Image (cartoon, rainbow, N blue to C red; front, side):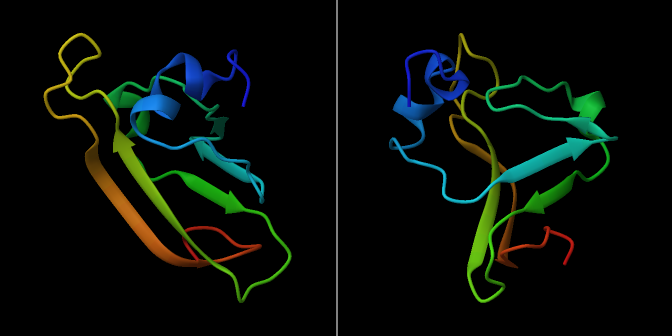
Length: 99
């Protein structure tokens, strides 16, 4: 990952995740609006559940999708760091979280 990667810039890579190389494509959209890595989302924009599409070529490979807030309640005062909003497990590759 480069220093310009949104997850590095937002300190997610250093504070929440270890460096990694993506192995399958992941597409997340709220109300048909694509969410990019490191994007800040307002609560009003994410009231409804997202559409999640996970790539890959093998439905026997299972994935877990976790939505956390890495600096809750605010970046200047992250007292609830890594607040878990939701988690979906056992998502087969080539499908989505609603599968």
